[in-house]
Image (tube, rainbow over the protein chains, first blue to last red):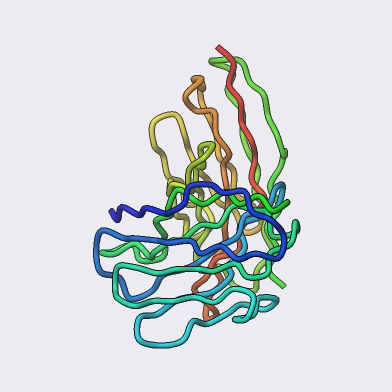
Length: 116
Length: 111
């Protein structure tokens, strides 16, 4: 299984500012995913980050608001730009499982963001 | 549009009191249904994948079953350490490999 770490684990930010969340995996992976988990809501995919190419964003999410970097096969960042209180959420990165069961995912511990 | 509805939203049990969590889904061709467990302050942890109606999977006190419209996560004689949020997700055939998640069931098991 993959071990995933995220930084920061939590943060409180002022509206209008930006926060960059880091995701580190202990093995090389082609795809990394960024999710948002708002209170009482389901886990929602923001984008898929592939190394060496631009991230693919899901409907309702745009690059200007959530720019993503993927400089190598073990690391990615998600920036939440020009934040508003509606961006308060848990942000999670994940990677597909390897081996026989590639349908499942391993998740990081999440970054709890509060925007005032 | 794919939909996943989990019920109940929250469930409180006494230790040893068995129960079931429900995941109803609507998808145009199911590739797989997943159950995850999420502890507070942590990311979801994979439990089971079910691929076809009639399939069952077990792990310790947990047993997942699947029909053409829903899945159940049965918890037998739960312990306080089973307290967590349980997430269900479905993956569609032939489409994006990204699963659609339900909102989860928050389970609290009292000693």
